[in-house]
Image (cartoon, rainbow over the protein chains, first blue to last red):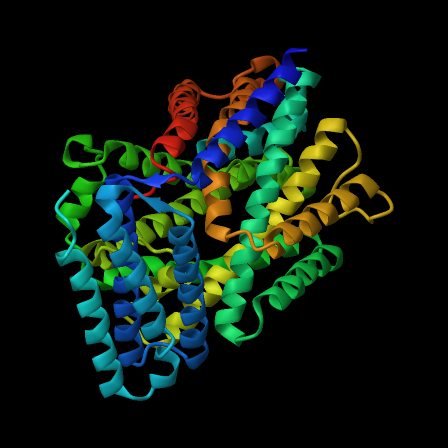
Length: 142
Length: 360
């Protein structure tokens, strides 16, 4: 039954690959570097989003919907961080990532209320920029 | 383009759809493995597409995503019931042209064409993370070649009763369709390089990607981009659901076709309804569309050689194809692509594991 063996092999490969994607382990400095990049990317996505709204290019429904999408991804990221264990050398950066995600979630939730308030959006953008820069600048050298 | 034209030609000349060829060339046992793997991928892809449709509808209406998902799946089902194959194919095919807004946006951002041309040549030496580069190269390659498109196209040629005089149309449709798809894909890649890369963004949501499509323009472009993605996703969800049904019926040699009444093709009807229903259930379970796309693109690459190889064999077989057999150039280029597909297929899962699914 060669074909049956092939089915089992494909299924095992799929399971192995999916386990590899969702495995929970101790975060190495490489994992933390990826995490910092992901959180920085979120901050930049919010910045570009604010620019887009300020330029009057987004509809109200899009602003609300996109905020929900970003919020969902941020909370997924926060959940992943909650489920992870940092190694001794990554503890500081790990905590910084968690704090930044929390701050970004807070700032993001304000955006739909500020659609027609350019000054407030500008201030909001500056906040996000500072949060992003703090995360990247204060990272421990690895 | 090459394989699409080939499978269209085989369908017209030999009246052999893809999964009848897979069964005949590989035998029932291994053919069944390919069928199961292909249909699992169709299911995952369809779930990702339904999830994407719900996201876009939410961005357009503000309604709840899960409700929109159910409405979308039901409407797609009704469309398959109510319309003939030709209408479904042409309506979604034409509406998808709205996606060109992504290519237009990329051009409107005034890219450096010299750097763009240089970027077409893969240079591993310039990348700090060759494995990640490899993973995304395989991903883009696979996304461009999604096997279900070939299955659907081949079945479509039979649905539309194409005969040998239609072979010119087959070539034009395959060439124009693939070229347009490639232009839009390149446009999206350029937008990634122009809008996201300088800002260190790895888009984690579909809506972020939409912003890039409307980046240089006003609100109307955003709406066009949303509608373009919506119609593309609707068309693709129908294609994957119908492909699943086509594959099963062609493999087991039972009657199939969207132009037949449901009573005349009960297995086909039950199969596409089941595909849509299960895909909807997967999407409703909260699975992330982007994760599903990742799985579908990587495993799609692994399965791809097993459907492309038999097509090449039949298209190059003079006994089957007669005077419509592959020319030397077709066969040589086909073999080169098959080798590339096989290499990419062999590398796909190891790259997925080593890069943690493309984590930067």
